Length: 242
Ligand SMILES: Nc1ncnc2c1ncn2[C@@H]1O[C@H](COP(=O)(O)OP(=O)(O)OP(=O)(O)O)[C@@H](O)[C@H]1O
Image (cartoon, rainbow, N blue to C red; front, side, top):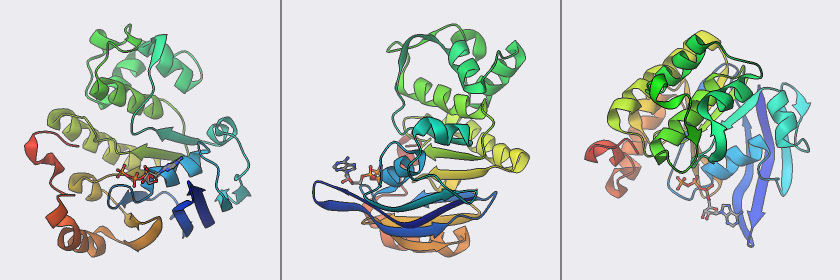
């Protein structure tokens, strides 16, 4: 279980994450949303150890992990899928999945992980994760690497970004199954109402602070009221999910 205590991150003289204290519910599907630039990705990067807090603590399963490296946090079962995933020239999709899994993977499991993110394995398994893949393909491959790991906490940063509507529908089902089957904690940053519908709990981050927290039934109507004029929930309307 994840707990944040007075977490603050400052850069360029600005408080990007501002004294956030949160205890996440164990085994819950938590969706974080809020306006662009509110500090959601920074919060996720602090949890993964990609950024270091200016002050405050991060506890995972009761252990203070604030000073631990990304690698040490990964060993404790925390995984993070970037908003804009990196590419790995010279590394095949199959190898990347095996590295994520920690040991060789049966062909059928590779096929299943790729299928879960809407990719046909015969077209991708032996391709390199390099610039020849589209942004949406790299994004889905990265999500597949999180599925291939045995994690206690999976953090997905806007998994819908750049994903077409057909693959997005598949992803929504995959997140639902991941949550129902694996009983892991899921922390998912999203602007998408269909993903918010999966949430056990929602957190709205605005100006680096928790602006609201509650069930989807409590939070969703307020989002539509507060943010619809700015288009936050209209991203899917043009044929793309994000
Ligand atoms: N290392 C940094 N140095 C300076 N500014 C930063 C740094 N990291 C983030 N920011 C700024 O902090 C703000 C919050 O960024 P962040 O990416 O966390 O927002 P977000 O809520 O995830 O936004 P979006 O919904 O657009 O993805 C932005 O204005 C960003 O430019």
